[in-house]
Image (cartoon, rainbow over the protein chains, first blue to last red):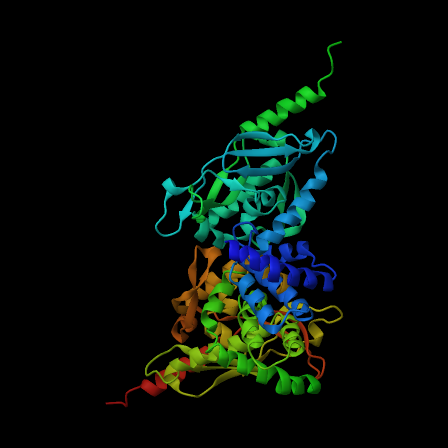
Length: 276
Length: 276
């Protein structure tokens, strides 16, 4: 891990940085939109988005100072991990969803994250306060030699994907994802339709061919979750509960309804008028 | 056109040839199988397959003699045409389907092609004879400024895709194709299911998530076409009827039933016993 991080610091980072600057920035939103038409949901399946990124960045890498050998190393590294795009996508989702934070009176979910112990949400109209509950245990498929007893409770920042209308919310665009996380292609359609019940909008750019090019559900509304008891579906990787082993599977879980109940309670308190 | 062909001869061809040899060959069948899980049907939609090819070939291009500048030119050229993979795929399909030609007693279609005037098929058990009829006119979507009156009758060798079980036969894996050729995503599913009626097998590697990972229908049987009157669906580009203008749209058409009737007649004649 450490030698790879050093290589990222010394080779990958500087070359990618130079390439992105030479390109004048690489717009990630159209790339995500295109990948959703190519079977990715851009959380647990990123093969299309990673491929599109390689196509886009390679000529800019070649225009920079890195040698052919270094560019080859970089392309092989990115190509060697079909989840590479998730690193970029999470940052893009964070940049988008953070714009909702602090919007007065809004019950939109601005952030959702897990740390292996707790899961929490932040709500647009409630500032930077987190509403938390114990992290759940994903159900899914395990890599060979591992099973449910090895799984750590859910962790990571990648649920920013679901907050931004991709990942579990865009599964209808990614029927092949079920080979990685379990279930049938029809489940993928069902999850997306269900998430439409708790969202305020359809994404104008992120469209799913299998649903006649409907936009992905986006903008989780605390009010809708509390009223329907439908909670966000999260596509997630499963980490081993012991450090140093890493990912052992992938699956699905739901955010617990308590954190939405708690957020609504806080909202009612914050907006309650003093007694007359 | 001529200057581009010269560039292909002088730059693209030698560099790609060197890269493919350095790679020890690039297997196209797994790439096609993967692309079918990424929304391509690999005839009129090749964005995923072209992206996967760029990922695969770039490190080998970089290991060859071409300069960074030339590699960049090549990657930009391939990346600039989402149909690039079709050039490779057609050759792979031809290599696969030609193996059936000359198989005694077989009513499998070994080849199907159009030349702008006629469409023809060859049948496994009937050697190299072509059974032909006038080429049809595709119905589809036209590029801005063009319409049905500009369309040349259907032409090209790319129907080898359908013979090999991709293209129109794999449309269920490519719902977004309807944005390019017309129709609704449900039509894409319907075409594939219908093609199952005239084929002898499901492809063991080419699987479609939207149909619970069923294999694409493959192996058009003259007997099944004649009996059902269902004829192969072809995804096609539409060329302008005047030379020098090029592609003006994309669409769908059906092979005419007469060429299958004629092939069966020839079969019956060729296998008829002399009168006792």
